[in-house]
Image (cartoon, rainbow, N blue to C red):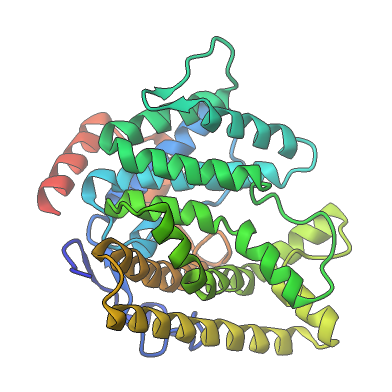
Length: 355
């Protein structure tokens, strides 16, 4: 992959937090990080104003490298802001989906919004929920940038929602084999794939998508288990608060299945993550050596290398899962008081011209 918009991230920033999972792996970060922040904060502002308050909410924002910035370091600059918005919207909806009282209705509402999208954009309806209106606005913005890849991303997102939409599991898993199959779907691997294609302007045939599925399995496992490893404290706390007798997390499943303590489960989880990371690296190397895959497929597979590495770094160091990590003073100011229009326009102009 050619690197035009990213730079190498100093390993001292994440080495300790990632617990040896990225030894020898080069991490890159987008140079236009502020565009990602703009999209995230804009999504939060829209949600607060039109849907509901965000008391105590922590999403994609990171003091050093927000979500898309680190997962897709070569995201095309003209779509970095809307990808920040879209991923934050997804996180906001995911938190709603996990609410037992509102989750099913919210999921169905969002799915309907995607199903009414045509080549010309989302269908106009007189009665839309507040979140549907934000969803339509987001879709139109994506379509205005790259209609073909936007429709691919929307189709992927719709497919994810049809399968349950990441609402968490309603029952405890008793073995890791079953849990991993669930987790691959639950992390939104299909959505991430659609976002990656939009971000990098990649077009692939259905046949190429099917050919990639087996290669990507180990990458999806890394994403799911890395998230579980670093979100354990937050998820365990939430399970207790909600009165659940189980935690939808690989560490809990490992402890129950193998009758081990938390420290041993974390060690075992790190071993599975590292093994699957190496397996995916080998798969990508082999794919490049075969010379049978198109340039688009190779770019897509390379893109996933950054997605899984970025997932580890972001999960290990983000405010969402680490209560001791704080947002920057500028981020807090923007979240509380909004971003002045003249500043937004200047940032967009400078960033797109520079990167």
